[in-house]
Image 1 (cartoon, helix red, strand yellow):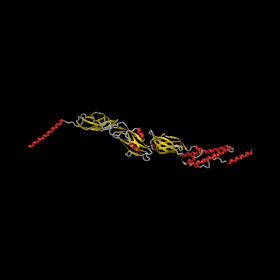
Image 2 (image 1 turned 90 degrees about the horizontal axis):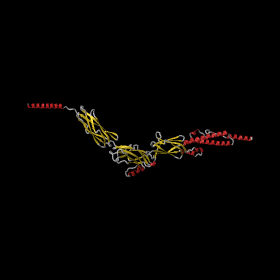
Image 3 (image 1 turned 45 degrees about the vertical axis):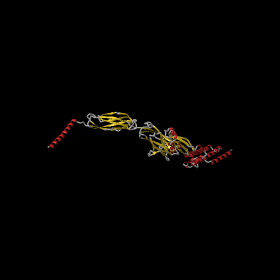
Image 4 (image 1 turned 180 degrees about the horizontal axis):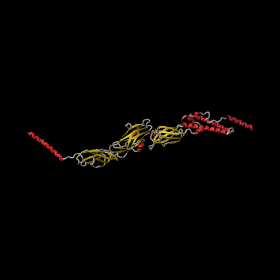
Length: 501
């Protein structure tokens, strides 16, 4: 028995001498300090160290089971293997996070049925795009496959403007996971209408991307979106009103369109123009990389109301943007009043506008004579004609006179309840000076005012000059006349006598 025990002890000593000590991952001869910089090479080194430690641990377990290795030595081998495994996992994660990449495949702007602008983003996982990553994906390592290298988790997406303010609703969208080869669509409502936005993406272990993107237009609609900030305006009779138009292309085949107006009374003149050059437009074309244009609709109202143009009654009408190849089809159609349903069935871009005819009274004052001469006890009497030369009835037409101190005035009538368009009314005025007034010239200012649609209207002021003549002395005048006659008579008599001599 002693001989057998000695033989076993010698064998254990020999085996222990040939078994190398466990090598930590960092102390592995394959380790290189540049592995943190070249992570794919570092992963290969860590994998080799991990496999080496695993083989050593499996061998140590076999020896332990045969009673040729102590528990402490087995535990040291297990710790070394665990360190190599953790190092391998860290290298795997570092490579995975480094190769993760998300791209925006599409960013399409469109308008929903409720009129709101949307952006439809399509995100793709492009992590499998490089050859090295494809090599990693083919690894049969169970640990590697459990990490799902073709899946990027926890992706947060938002849309911002040039000042980096979020302009999307929802403000931030989350994608739980994005798999390679499976694009993920997202839909945002634009809170600010822009053609270029910034897409912010946060994913993986905190990686970020920020891209400024020019939005594509939804070419499937094949139409032009028309908008007007001044969609409802008041227009004064005899004058013009201008509606601004923003035209945005949503078409992939047609880029030339015509402009038409429907449901506007024929008495209203209308034409389209370029707001910058003031050139008149009937058709326009979208140039390359410019999907938005501006235009203006100029409408001119007649001088007088008609049966179709009633003061204060809104006139709804439509501006249509029709593809050039359909213009002839539209123009050959019989003129009529188009309903909203008929315009919708045309499947063209349109916008509904509204024009409210308004008039404004204009008060004209006519005074045939503005200079009067009176005696000190006389009275200035004159008539003034008030004429409404505007396009709306005048109400509460009032004429007032600013007379000199102590003068009296009488105005008949002082107030006219109303003055219709082109109507004339006469007003009589009397101004009387006080007793004992010195002779000279005095000014009386006439002021006229009225209301038109509850808005004040003033007529032109007039100035009346009243000359007060000095009072004459009859007796003194008679004496002077007699003296003059006497002198003349004496001269004649004296001349006759001289002629007789």
